[in-house]
Image (cartoon, rainbow, N blue to C red; front, top):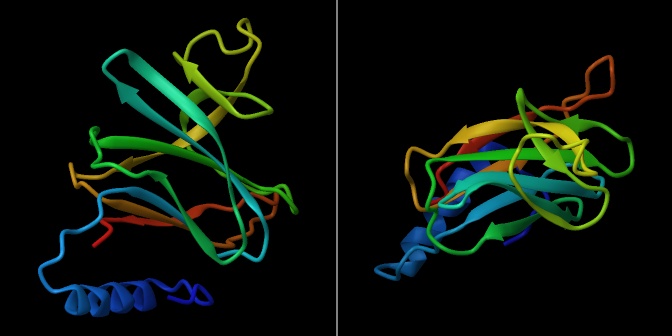
Length: 157
C-alpha cells in the first residue's frame, strides 16, 4: 500500500478494498498513527491502565507513513495523543495534561510532572467507542502560531 496521499476517502477506499481481498481473515487489532505531513513527527500516547494513568513516547513517524503504537486489541475506550513536528516545531495537542520527557519515556501518573523531573504537554482525547482498532491521521493544518491540529481519528477497519 502506498502512503502518498492520506485523504480520508482514499484511506477508507483502500481499507474497503483490503477487506475484500482478505475475505474471512481476522482483522488486525491496533492503535495506529499516520503522518500525512512531509516532516518527521514525534508522537506520545496516554491511556488509563489498571495501575493508573500512563504516558509514553516517543514514536518517530517518518513523513507520509504510518506506525502502530499498540499492536494488540485496545483495552481502553479513551486514548490521548500529543505530537510534535520535528522540523517546523508545530504541535498536535489538546486540553488533557500529561507528563512527557525529552527522551524515550514511560511515565506512571499525570500529577506533579515538573516536581518529578518531567515536562507537561496537552494531549488530545480520542474516544474509540471501545473499538479494537483505531487510526489517527496527522495532517498539516498550520495556524498563525505554527501549531497544527489532528484531523481525524477513526476506527481502523
